[in-house]
Image 1 (cartoon, one colour):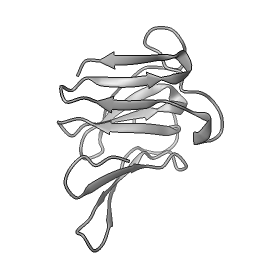
Image 2 (image 1 turned 180 degrees about the vertical axis):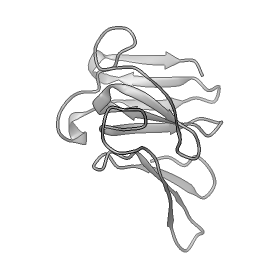
Image 3 (image 1 turned 30 degrees about the vertical axis):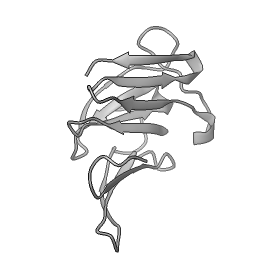
Image 4 (image 1 turned 90 degrees about the vertical axis):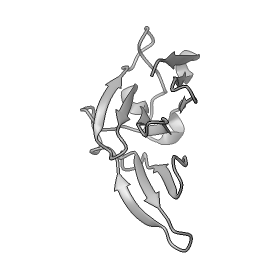
Length: 132
């Protein structure tokens, strides 16, 4: 879960493999505003165990797609932009674990104030830094 803007909450749901719902609230009620990702799979915008996510200062959403061993990027409206990575241990690859449920995966993604993206590649025992 993260709070990218005033009155917004982003929350992941690996059970339906559709990353993040964007919720908006006045103080009395919470309303569902948006769903990111196009369902389970390996294609562009599809997710398999979305484990962690972060929002950059420009509003882009970075999703750690653990089951596919990659990072996917969406714009603020939920449209797919790009991706990088694949499952493995070589350079440019990630290993976030394997299994049937979220408890079988580990890793995290954050974006710093300068826009650099950091990915905890847990199974490979490293933290990777990417330029914006």
